Image (cartoon, rainbow, N blue to C red; front, side, top):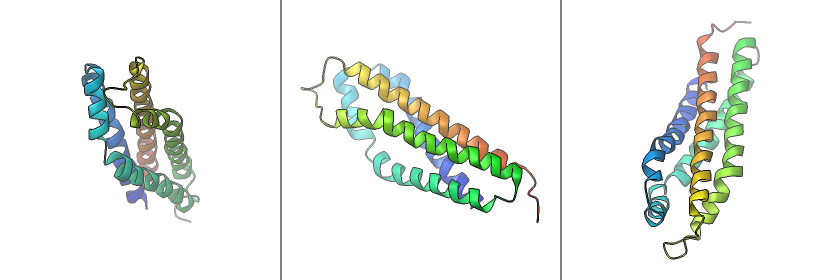
Length: 150
């Protein structure tokens, strides 16, 4: 379960970090080009990525139950589970509303304030990546300690 949780959290971190790496290039795009990227590049993120993220969170909470007798591992795994859960909540509050707005736009209906939506979408993904980076780090620290045997 430790391996599975770490793998799923790492995969989610990779997806989130990919968004961060794309920010400088996407900030250079005009509105129509940026919208084209948004509508075409992230097709699998919403299906495959969402499933991996949910499994990452669930597996980390399940791992927490398994390490409850190991005080150090429990504390770090709890931190990982809380951070991963917080990342999903942050995504739902910040990124998801922007996705809903974008889904109804096309090049002809792009609103004048599209940059504010873009900036919130990008910032939301950067925060999401940070939270999953911290969650992954906490899981690794939890695994580095020597487990106590009862």
